[in-house]
Length: 245
Image 1 (tube, rainbow, N blue to C red):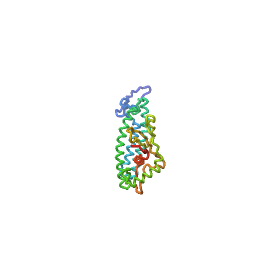
Image 2: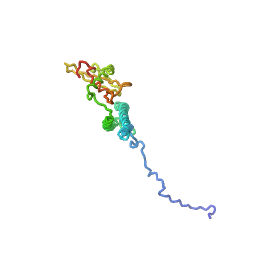
Image 3: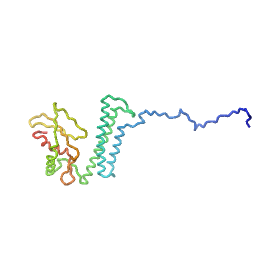
């Protein structure tokens, strides 16, 4: 029994070393370190790797595989117009500030180019594979020179009636500088000259595209197609009468 006013000494309990909190042992994280962040441009390209993989998957229906291939192509067009274009503007303005992932604008461009090259190699391989599978199903995309004489006459007549009136060649010389090339446009650069003159002239033909103008032209009743610009390139004598090219 403890008497009144008696002082009792209480020994402190021994701390459990397993539960002891030692602030010096806590890991320290620098949240500004680049290692904790992903680059916006490179991760967007990796997304397109995954889209391309859907086109490579043989379990995917053939036309769906072609759709995924087309999506990758459209995405890369947008990537260069928007994102690479923006980075080039930063380089031109002399911006050297690092992103949160530790990259300069110029460094991002170089790394993106490497990734894009790998995507394009796979994309071109897949395109050839899918064209072969389309051919097995009776759907063929051929060059103008692969058509027979009757088929060439058919598409030439179509050119005269429907395409030729839409074409406006643009000449380029010191008085007419290189024209503005709009995004996503298809263009032909044609070198012409007079028959008795060695001096060449540069001409630009913008391939008309848009609503109601097919990208591929069907030949005959079968599923045989040629590219729109291929037909124009093989009718230049109509566009530039009396000139060599």
